[in-house]
Image (cartoon, rainbow, N blue to C red; front, side, top):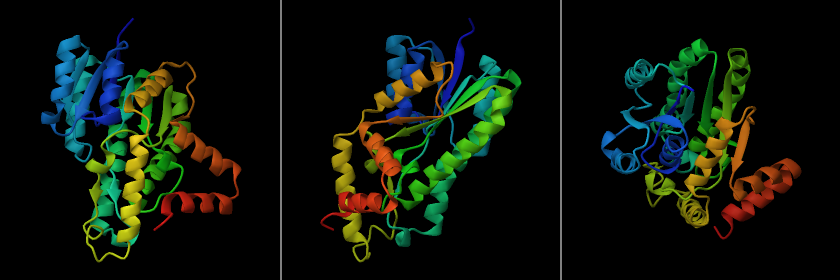
Length: 280
């Protein structure tokens, strides 16, 4: 049987890193893409140690030329792309009023237009094959809004809408769309996030709210789901004959999703306000 080829974006750490490894360890040839190739040292070390079927490629989801060159290279080298995992992205933190339009635009450029660019380059390959799976890494923030993360949340809501729309378009071509919705993950999300320039100033009207949100998220991350657990769900999903459209990962996001579904809007808003903004 021909070995399946998987492409994963944003593999320097966290979910992308764990996904690249678990796919390579379970029968896939994984093309791990990374924006800054110097950050691939850990992947290279493990690849050599375990003799994994894993290639490392430079790819910047903000750069259309970079995407085109890398996807073309992968297709020429391996002849096909069976799985695409869109994981690359980052968080922009700050109240909406403190965000500049430039900062918001850059957040969308990476988190949503980055995924769009990669999908559009991979689709013709999968359509010709009449087969393929596209996994979009969304978030609990694609289900529920959170204060001081409006730009990030907006990109995840956009990714959910995009995924649901193209799901129907691609069915006739044998291409499946899967959304993964992790809750709070034990990663360096806060450390690697960008704080809006205005939000970092002491005279911001939202400084106290932002401080509280940061503290709460840090506490939640300490008890969060390990990124390897997300990778296991991705592996299970792409190996299923009839995968679900959405996969929630983590007890926290499952509880939030259930509460939002079962409660009235007013009740849900009160719980969210008490949990996130208490003592502000």
